[in-house]
Image (cartoon, rainbow over all chains, first blue to last red; front, side, top):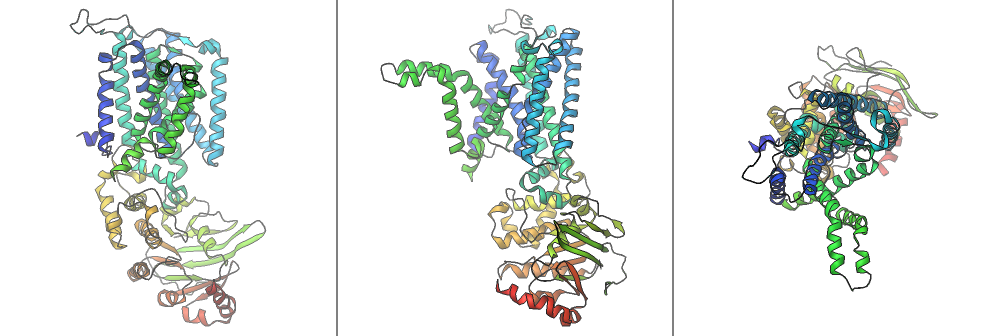
Length: 353
Length: 269
């Protein structure tokens, strides 16, 4: 049963299965055990990024396409909800219309990029996507009447999802059963279903052709697979899943701006997460995301503690200053790539054999 | 020059090239090669190194676009179609330089070829919502082909980890999996060990005995050519210089001069 849900693509490593099980339970019960709003925000961000990174894995890890336009689709999803609810008020129909319009736009854009540029060499394709993403980011911050410009858009969502909507008052657990929690579970279920869908796609006959194209596109073509069609479909699918992640982000933040969903930094984060977790194995996106977001969220606190402990020792406190957290994150990345060139998941699976 | 061997046949696989040519820069690698190939015949294509044999294959199977001329399969013009469409039309190709999916398992390599060539619920790879491993018919066929090339114990190894000889066998198995109307072997036994060579030659013999496939074979080893060829064509500097039954072609002065002289040099390399 579980094997079918996972499309028979099991973790294939006891350690990996254990870690995934723990993470699943931790995220499932996050609203009940995490100590702060900040922690719950991180949990939601983990969920959304798992989907975002997994959708990028379909493109990079499975099809072998290097694209820098992935945050563009993420942003389109977030802006879709933001603009629609801003214009039509906090109704479900506005949310759904915004999401559907965003999905449609993403599909069209991805198809256009794919058909115009997937025939060229990989490096040119990467450059074209980079230019598209930059143009789109500029467009989003310039069209301030629609998008709110650099400031972005604050918007309200249907009442059911509001933090002030409490639907079980005075419950025995002493926990807030409110709209925020409902939003969390909406995101949890959506991410779970979409992740399983991605797992299904990469293990389908279509997915095996994608892997063949990654391995040797020339031979895939010689066997009778029209490579450009498969690549285009893979690009469109990947864009759609990224757009869905953007929609979920907007639902959680009730805000969207260029820096939250379109920035190039997010694109780099996605790449880093995928490389750390392991390309070409959907599970890599889960492991990578958890490590990366926890590091991002707590490395500064950890460094503050460490530099406190190191007081009195020369140089060390300065080196461990919380302001240096990016340095340490970078160092962790270098070490991860050095020791696990296949990513953490690749490493765990290798050990078994 | 016309084809001398063309038995009447209802089978698919009547391949024809008309004035097929290609130039790279100023160099004409294949010059107006017109030739017909019929089902039930194994044609060996011989010629010195650089004569354009592999390029001729590439023009037929679509890896390189032709500058002039046409490629016809059963009367249908394939000249403007991409390689994938030609493969689906029935042109199977095994490459001289091994050309596999290195990171995938041996079984997955073959399964991909089987999936590409068969009609079925897998929709030749455009089925996104079923699990590949559930298509048991494809898996069974892949396993059968593995057995045929005696590689069953290697099913789960990656193609990259195989020995050269096994990679060559897998290369041939990929084409067999397509079960095409036209088989194009490009030096299938080059660099193979004495153990592996007979396996591949047996496969070719079996195909030839079936009598309903069009077989094209680029081959340097003259003993193989003598044993297998129903017909030999000779390419020299991109042009077709001889065509006919093996005994006649081998004896013709143009071959003695153009090919066998150079073949002696080629043997030294």
